[in-house]
Length: 370
Image (cartoon, rainbow, N blue to C red):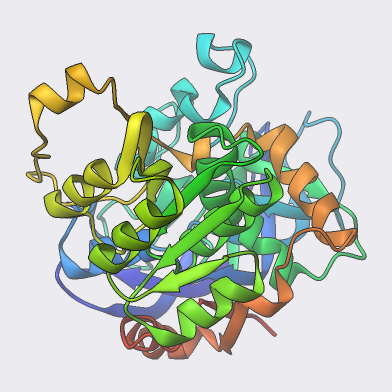
């Protein structure tokens, strides 16, 4: 079928709305009509050239929609099913899935190339012989998209998909960074550096886990204010302020954990977080940096203070279990989502949406489709 979507042709560049041809679904695939797609920073890394992009690229990796066609011999799915897409698929069979680490599923190795596991590309540009890569295999910035069932999470039809779509990336990445990767427990002191579309959920996760002090750090006042509404007990514009406050509340020891959720990771972000934690504390690195970004820390302090630096992909979440769990929390009023969708945009306004993100006007902007 023919649809339209946002495609990146050059990096650095900008999104262009063009016609896209989408193949019919094969076995274990779904054709989905999109309802909503989140404007996540990871797509913007490609736009700004922070990350090498497979070009041309049909963008978007956070979204939700309705199934309009099911591939042959694909049991368990029907036209009309509502789905939230996981930007990391889970095959359920590899070593990582079998040991409860679906976020590291072997299927993820194909996502950077934007192709299927068999190397095929299932979307194309009319009259263009180049392969059209799909962002994380799902391309949520397209009015219709083709996805593997391994990336689809069926959700109740009554859920508002404009909010529920956030569970496909931002919620699990941030919330899981606190709950799974930092392993926050009651009484902890936690610093969250950067409280945009990811960090705001790390604040919620730390609060849900019973942290006594949840300290949000962001130069944007809107984000600091929102952090206070979802569980932050204090908020500061800079790390030096946050570190001074943290030590004043912990007898000089420092935070139990510091979660780095900045827009683009820089080495000094990790250095500051490392300085902020106590002995045997944990720095969780959730933000993504340039390919050549190296981290500088004090080796003696790493060993003698037994500190830990923990990477975090999708917050260590298991999509098939954690996305439904987080949406249940949302339905029960324990997880805020509606309030964090601060602006909605038409697909044609996607570049403006990202300009607003950089200007600090949004916690999360969302594209809504008619």
